[in-house]
Amino acid sequence: MEKVLEKGLVLNSNHPFSILKSGFEQKPELGSEVETAMRGVLTQLNPSDPGARMGFGGAYEWIMAIACCVAGIQTVPGGHSEKGFDLLQYGNNLQGLWSLKSSAQAKPSGEIRLKNKMSSGSSAKNNSHSYETATVFIAPYLPGITYFDPLVAIGYGSRIEQNDEAITIKATITKQFALDNPGCVIPFQAPGNPGSANQVWQLDVVTSILTSGTYPNLGPIMADMKKNAATIQYLKQQFESGNIDEETLSKLLINLGV
Image (tube, rainbow, N blue to C red; front, side, top):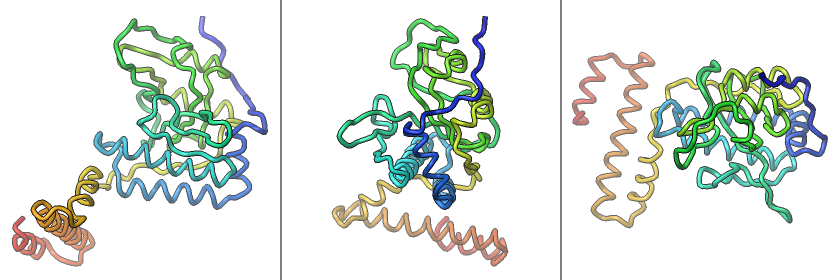
């Protein structure tokens, strides 16, 4: 028999998420800045690209950590190197706040991977004890930044599933939870993925290292490659904007050796 799904949950006023929510309410510009910053991330990183997905999630963690600081919660991103919470509260008492799961997809499709399993064990579905971490979800299909604690929302927690690879929850379930429990939601419109970002963040890291002046053999080649890549991107933008025609674009690319 399935457990009843919770409705109308309300967090205590001194709960960290309530403090964050109050910060967004008292400073409307905070939400606007967070949204703009996230849009900026999506112009640089495409989360549909597996190679950029981790960088996307980490960038959102930093943005939310800084927003928490503005709201009066001192936090630092634990990032993907941490075995547990993505955000850590520091001060006199170091404690975990929540795990942050971000998405830029427009519709709630598929499953959200809450936690990867280090080794394959017995597969069990609908086990509410498989995941006990408070989690914040950010996605365009949600009515806002959503706080979900499976130890409080036991009914919804029972919808968490696990297999040999990961512990997951359906995206549609997170949306239903947010709609049923507005007290656990900060009204916010998360930006969708425009799909136009083409930056390779790993390459940017390597470029910053090799062009630092320490590598006389590797550095010049990387500098030339970076310069050519920027020129090619600029020319393509000029073509897409109608400033140059296809023939001119082709000639310029040939001159660059492309």
